Length: 172
Image (cartoon, rainbow, N blue to C red; front, side, top):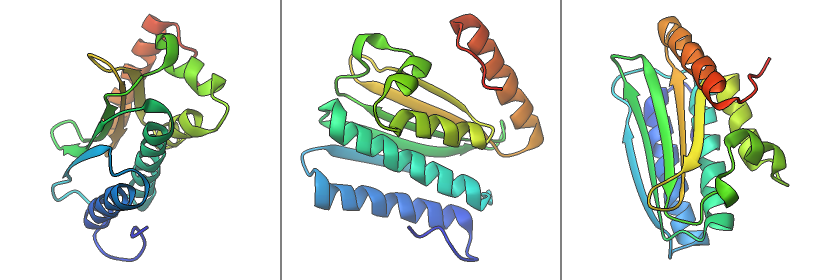
């Protein structure tokens, strides 16, 4: 999927995501309107993070195609240099989660490994994830990954605060 080799990781990730979207449009669903925005600056990404972002995007798009009944999906990947983070968002205008289920409920209740696999990839990269209803309808998946130790600490605190306020069990 274009993420191997010694070239700059951010260029490989951007091209791999563009190829993924183009393939989905051509092979699977030309009625779904895809919008991709990638802003990676000059930051060199670790290979494992580039692969995780690609795979999360791939699974999120598969979920949109299979379950959402959406007509549009927006994918954004960007670096926030001041925060030292990479963020990924996949937002569709489809059905959303049934009954406004939370991420933990949706991930554990899903018959496949889609949302649970996404969550595991985010956590394996010390990231933070939010999956919730998009307005006026649809689903919003947002993941934030640290690019340095300070950002990793900030994301850990943010995830802990969210877990306390939402009564979502923290992973051990």
